[in-house]
Amino acid sequence: MPKRFDLRHFFFTKALSLPLSAFSSKKAFRLLPFAFCLIAAASCSRNPDMQEPGDSKLQGEWRQDSVPAQKSLVTYSLYDIKFSCDSFLLKISTVSKVNYGADTCMSKGHWDEYVRGTYSQRQDTLHIKGQFCNADGSYKNEQGCFRFGDYEEYFKVHQQGDSLIRFVSTSNVIPINAHLIKRTSCIPKPL
Image 1 (tube, one colour):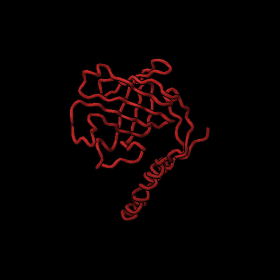
Image 2 (image 1 turned 120 degrees about the vertical axis):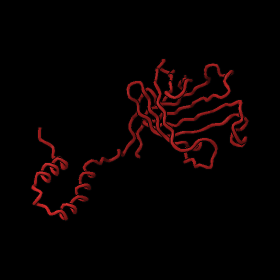
Image 3 (image 1 turned 45 degrees about the vertical axis):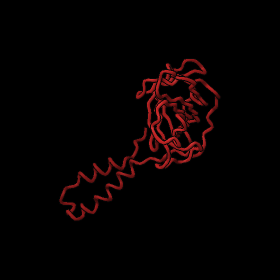
Image 4 (image 1 turned 90 degrees about the horizontal axis):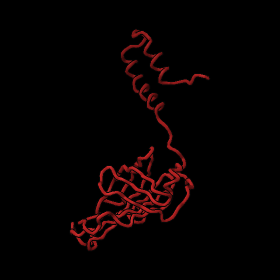
């Protein structure tokens, strides 16, 4: 197997093995930014041009219809999740018996929030990372209602059948029991 040429290894073994008298301190100082640029360039990698395929068992639209003891809870959220290749769109529908703020946002105790982003799965752990957005998927600014900015969550995924799945959040005690609404397959799109 041919040995791969590594620029970092070459620089450190050859340049550092030269006697100190071979360089004056001014010349060595001038080479320092060049050396840093070479090391930084060697460690960079290109982003992919296409979407990743994602997990085929998750592809489609999933809906949570209720939560355990829903009638006795003061506030609860129901989730609709759409997985498309390595991307997701999450709709969080919250119901509250308590008025947390202006009714223009709360709409008498019922409101929706949206998150879009990408996910990855390692064994039974699903990691979703995205940003809060508007209903049409556009960027949500700070002046709008509710949460904005980054959203990140880890779930333990328990497949309970072909059309039932349980997402157990690492930061919430109420699991998301979702059923399949529509199965889709991944058709990767260019990024």
